[in-house]
Length: 538
Image (cartoon, rainbow, N blue to C red; front, side, top):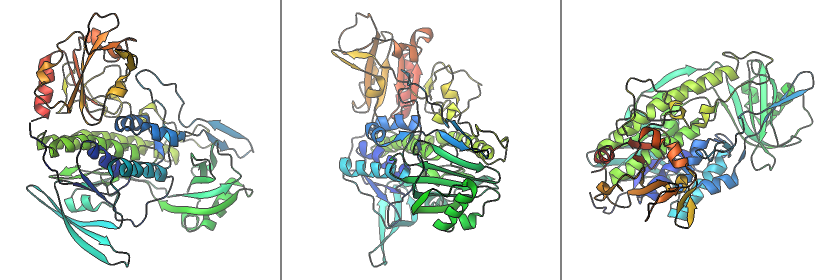
């Protein structure tokens, strides 16, 4: 193993949720970071507000979940106003009871500007790192041992001050118009461009119930929706579109939006206040042909854009950051070979491609471009797969699985939620683990800075891993209720660990859980366990 020496900061360009999560992931591993953003002020707006359960699990790994849960709110039911004066109420996403393997099963709503502020606060208070605003990456060059980045920092007088910054790795989290992606020469392959333009924004308003996501009109001719921020303080997010909506007028000013709102809804009793932001956009589907080149990477919207339908984009960016973060940390600290970084693009690209297909179909349905039938109330169904429990890396070159079946098709978005738990799937939780006088769960024992090895069935306590650094691998000896085993063991008092990992039926002895909460190895012998770490670590 390589000993850790003084590390140079990794440069992240773009301080949206993806860049912020990546920075936190790296800093937790002791990897220094420089985080820049070309904007002069932090962005405002509700925007990507749906936080999916898989993202909540990742925030649990980072220690951020309690804060996110305290500040966020539940998904609001849709209230659709009909032309006959009546209305119908339905849940956009079905509320479900948490289960032992999925303790955070429901999405939450968290305005993107508040979400980003929470991540920035954590960065500053925990790691002493602040986002460098007014700092733009304008070009870069790669060389054998790093990247030379040319930055321009705007001074208060508007003049730009140039700086050349040497970094071992550069990550572009710089959005759909990514300078990093463009200068890498990556293709941004175009999928579908929808024949619909939408006006979105936030505005202060009085006279609408905070409880619902209010919807008026018809998706084909003209529709407007309004939903309150989770803070219930008078701020509302709105979306307006349809073939008969003049988006130039509606999206041109506060007055233009109000006029269109009143025309579609028939409501003149709503008192509108200050307009917070307003934008016009056409949903577009694009994806980079690969997500890295040499020592430079792209994450989030820099490598994939799509319709916001289904709330997948921000969550997919967070997963990009998690997948890359633990690998980049190990390689930069000298504990893993550089080839590990190739798996970032290889694992994430199939997931992103599947996500684009799903959000494309949702958009077609929502705007009457597909199977939508005018007059229906239910509208757009959000399938369970949008909670992202099924996102998986089955078949990845860096996972080891003694139970995988060859030549079986894999859905990168849903297969991880079928009946067969395999390497590459999300690792399930298991409560009721007793260690001495304390009780805990797997989700409280997993972490974002180390691999967790679960040892089942009386197997040897993974002594073969003793040569690896103790802070990189945590070994947990799991024994069933009634076992006579003593020492540092976790008694599976409720049986969930043995059940969720299908230990008895398949003879599972070792499970390796990666720092991103994914099963890296599922084996019935020490041989498979060693194979995983020999390939992963140096």
